[in-house]
Image 1 (cartoon, rainbow, N blue to C red):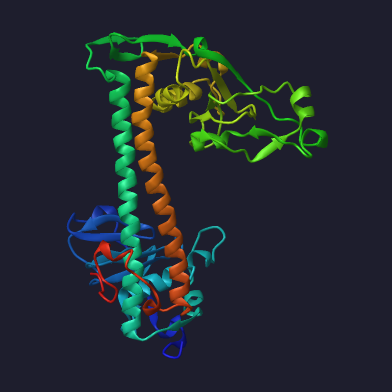
Image 2: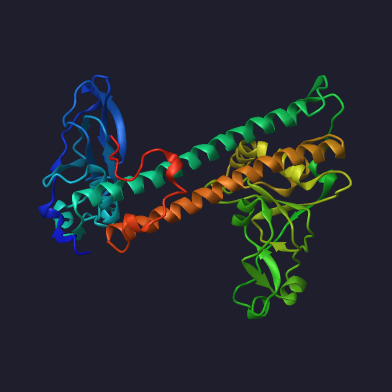
Length: 402
């Protein structure tokens, strides 16, 4: 840290007020118009030459944006005046590290007081080190963006593949029209209730310790369906709870469907790979595996996600829910077991690729957080790091991107 100097942000930057530019006054052009949480439009002239940094003043308080070209920050923002000629990308990462989003000074209307920002103490390295730090962090973020794009592409591929598989199948057969849309001529349809027992669970009273203390039997809540393949549980109940609360004991191969839930939970489904029971917010289909592959049913139900949510919302209640009666009567496609397994294998291959990109993205997110903290505090130096695993992403450390 001998080459670093201690300072306050007040000595290094000024946060200047943006200028109002109402929508009706904007002339569409190549200049980005920035609000407190990013670009909100375009204009044909700029207020500030680029590069520059925009900080949310009202609304999305403390959010930090970077503009590589001339831009127009509106009056809900500050823009950074670089008093000491620091590396712009370094300043951008430094301000992100400073936690400005936690400095909200208005309880009713969120607002950022720039005096609170100016009071922040920090240590600054020499200009060359600033460039190296910024370039390394940019490199990790580019790698992260590549994984995010790859994940989005895989998700899009899976959606397109599912639409094709569940309407055209794998054999190139002529199609027929059915109540659930086109499908291969050799396929049949069935009501979901004919493919296995359908029901839901319950929640043993938390106040009765005999239901919970020392429990070893897996009990699942609706958030678990996000896992898609359930192999573990977060909560466990006792044999007493199983006996007295009339809970279903589900075997591996059951398809679980979230029938209520806030946000996006309702309509999601998963395949159970362990013996478990469930709460009242989940319905199960204990699949007869001689008739249907559980993962095939899950795949089809995933294509029906929006439809299931529409059905739940159509019940006239502000708290939408699917019913077991509706699920029993839900029509599903039914190819031969061999074709079901082949379809599952294709979707599983895409899922493995999706999981790989999710894992890579998670690793890179953690790496970026760790590097941001350690590099900005001087705990580690760029010269101490082996960058060979990241060097395929483009810019080398020390290069200041536009």
